[in-house]
Image (cartoon, rainbow, N blue to C red):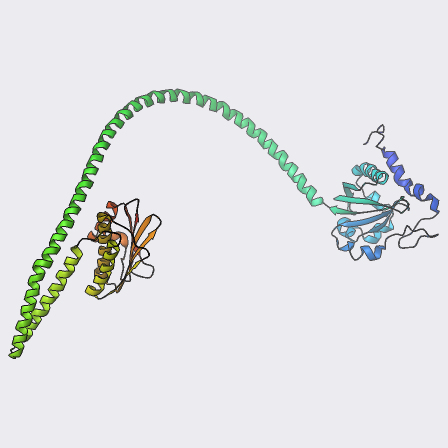
Amino acid sequence: MIEAGDENSISLGDAERVIQELASVFFEANGKSSTLGSEPDNGDDRRLPDVEARYRTLVEQVPAVVFMIFLDRGISEAYVSPHIEAALGFSQAEWLDDPIRWYRQIHPGDKERWNIETAQMVLSGEPLRSIYRILARDGHTVWFHCEVKMVRAEDGHPWFVHGIAFDITELKKAEEELQNSRADLEKRVEERTKELALTNKMLQLEIGERKRVQEDLLGARHQLEIRVQARTVELGIANDILKSEMIERKRLEKSILEISEREKRRIAQDLHDGLGQHLTGVAFLSKVLADKLTEKLSAEANDAAKIARLVNEAINQTRELARGLLPVPSGSQGFVSALRHLASDVEELFNVSCLFRDEDAIPIRDIDLATHLYRIAQEAVTNAVKHGHSRQVVIDLSHRGGTVALSIYDDGVGFPDVPDHKEGMGLRIMNYRANMIGASLKIQKNPNGGTMVTCVLPLNGNE
């Protein structure tokens, strides 16, 4: 309660007296009071709002209790919305018929505070915002959050108050449950704190034991570090030896490939200049012999013609072998030209469609790099035609930033399971060549059927 000595406060008795006498104090000069919905006499322009028109159509739809109280009628209720029945169990008529029912239904524990806060609102003119408990018809308590504002007449005298009360009972129940939960939590925390204190004591004992064990471990660790250092020196020596062996192995592998390429060139030359020339001579003589026998109508003429055809097939196969063994030309256009000839030879020798696509001229001048890429393409195309039974093959060469991508697509039967074929000689050779030039090789099934082989090479100054 507000202390009586404060000049800005009032006592409970003062509050009740102010509320009871406000109408007579401010309306004494008028000689009569206004009634709801009627016009004041003698030109009094303090006209009340049309309650029926303004409140019934608008306010009664609000899910809250809306009310109006006259100050010139001994603070009696002028209007209350029908929601009063849902909230407190009193009908609208019952509530209005008893002028002071609203005051009687205020919870006894809140009446003193209501008197003070209402008096302060009337004296100061400031809106009242507060929470009160109201007793319903059946005696249970309903919590309301009230927003009340005082309206003054044109002469400045208090005229009436109107407000709205929201039912916050469920919110209060939730708050109470929350407080109970908090109390329960605090109790549990207290119990848990005691448990933790006991645990902490046990932990301190365990820490002491662990320190002793740790000292033993430090001694063992020191011995282990000495052994690790010695082993590290041994591994360093072994690593140097291994590096030397790897360098020597790469040198030998490169020499083997160089020897292999030289042998391929020699064999190709021998096939072209030796076996190829001899087969060409045999084919010519077979053709001459077949023509002579045909002129003589000899029965052996057909046999001679068959021999000539077989020799021509051997010549074609010899040319195919020689072309596959020839070196790859270097230079800015040599590698591209070699791939273009490869596509042309495949179409000529195997009677399949082989398309070569290049987005840009790839300036690969390193003969070893060009040779490895060419052999990868050659092996992939050969696999597609001979093993994949492809009818269409595409050799694609592209240049993206600092990488070269060589891809071979086909429409053949593909690999049933690509990983199972990585041990095949052809695929092992392709992987080996890719590793030799620092490229990555990927072999996978083509979504549209067939196989896709992709070799990606970072240039890094190798172009």
